[in-house]
Length: 174
Image 1 (spheres, helix red, strand yellow):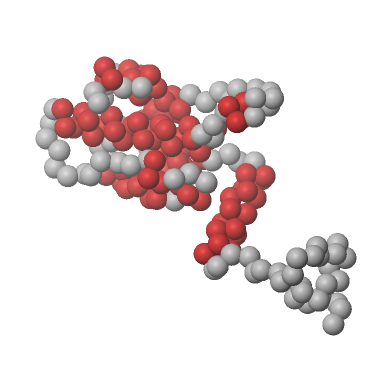
Image 2: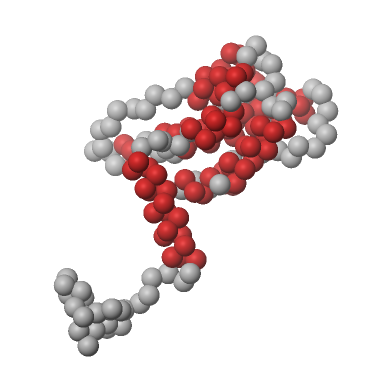
C-alpha cells in the first residue's frame, strides 16, 4: 500500500513531515516491537499490530512500503490503546458518551520529531486510576485462567451469602 491507498491519518502524518521517512532509528522500531508484543496487557491482540521484517529493504517502493506499514500499525495501536477499539455506541446504542478527540498522527509526529518516541508509546494508555485497575484485573484473571480457572464448588444449591457453607474453603461451619 503506497500513499494513494493509505488511510487518511497515515497520509496526514506524512504530509505534516513533508513525506520525510520517520523510521530511520532502529531503536524506535525495536521499541514498537516491544510495545506491540505487550498489547495483550491492554486487552488488545498483539497480532493486530504486525510490523514488516526489517531486512535489507531497497530504496524506493520497498522502503516506502516498510515506512507506511510501520506508521499504519503504530497509528492503529495508538488509537486502539488511547481511545479504545470500539465506540461505546457501537456496542450499546443507548450509550451517549462524548466522542474522544485524539489526533494520533499529530502526536506521533511530535514524538518522532522531538526524539521522545518511547515516552509517546508509554503515555498512550489512559492515565486514569480506573484504567490501571482494569489492566491489573485483566492480568489477575488471565493468571487464574492459566492456572486452570476457578475451583469448582460441588453441589447444586446456592452458597449462602454469609459464606458459612461447608463447601467453601475456610468456611466457618464444619
